[in-house]
Length: 540
Image (tube, rainbow, N blue to C red; front, side, top):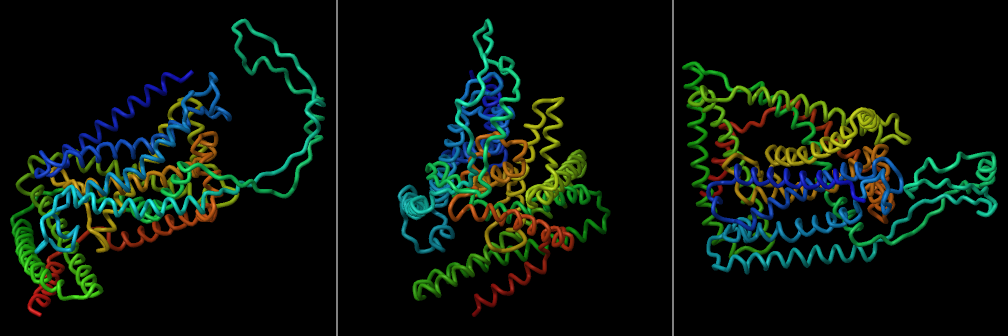
């Protein structure tokens, strides 16, 4: 029988994720998207529910199995009775569908008239149907990743699980015991007799092969694609998660340190003049970028493929630099307004909550670092650490361990998004997609949801490995730490702990870098240098 409490947890969890996702879409959307882009909004909302559900499914798996082996497939009083294999299989199929079908299609459809995304420039482009253009690009994505998925499953779907052979006497040689029947016709462990000397003799007669053998199995497509998506997502999570685990506590604490203060007349005049100069320079840069884009539209037609690709990459990098400077200028302008015009209306509790959140984030990040160093990397582990903490709290509050797993796991997702934004803001490899109240375009929503979904399965795998003692009887532990752990090609990365080492190294390097340059700055000098480079290119 299914545990009614777990059913209620699922319903409440789905409702809360839906409400939070809807709130984020409504409060953060740009006014230009208020009465538009309904399909992308639905994809973002359901994608948020899917990402949150993927992470929260791990603690649900723990609660369902209730620290008892063999719960899967059995209807017992000590198990939750949920079919977690079915739950996880649904998640394993939905994530690729969102990442490679729905989100790319919505991005292509939403940005169909944006020349920078679709063709390098929209100047001189022939008008096309938004739906036709989006389907054209999406079909290309589906074909490419469909071939990758099919070929990898065809050649790499074998897992070699190590086993140890035990040989014992015939079953009939064992002792026989009678089971006392009870009135309610149900079985309980109390009906079994205690083991005696005859049982010990049978156990001592077993022989064990000292050498391990392997058992090769073909895993089902859902499990294999979960491993493939986790492997792909690990490259992003190791980088952005490591950056975010260092950057998130620091930025929250700096939000308190740099909270708005009242300015005197001299400070006000200097800050106002600095902002005015930066705005004027950025306006000049924007005009020069527009002129350069129009000139490049004609030059691209005369260039070869290699030259055109190089020129388009340089133009894209310049646009990213410009958008980065605009974003930082807007942040400084908002801080200036909070120190002047909005000073009396500014909520003083915001920096206090930022400080408390920063301290909490710092504690969680330090716990993760210790868990990696003490439990995940050494063989055997030095100490179970957080596993013991979760089990200890369950002795006096049964759900606290499960809630702790959910908090620690979801924190990693937040760090991945923070790390991606911080990396894009400091280095110009891709466009930043910040989440700002009433200023977030749907393309930024889609980008961030895609990133979260790509990192969701690595987070689950990472958490299942970090809390393997606590979650040893879960379905997901059998999937990631047994079947996929010994999977051909991909398993080597997990057995060698490549990604764990990479995440830890990136985290430590980020701490050193942010210790030297804690604040995101892009002052007037960057705007001036960008303006001068554009003038040289346009005049040349």
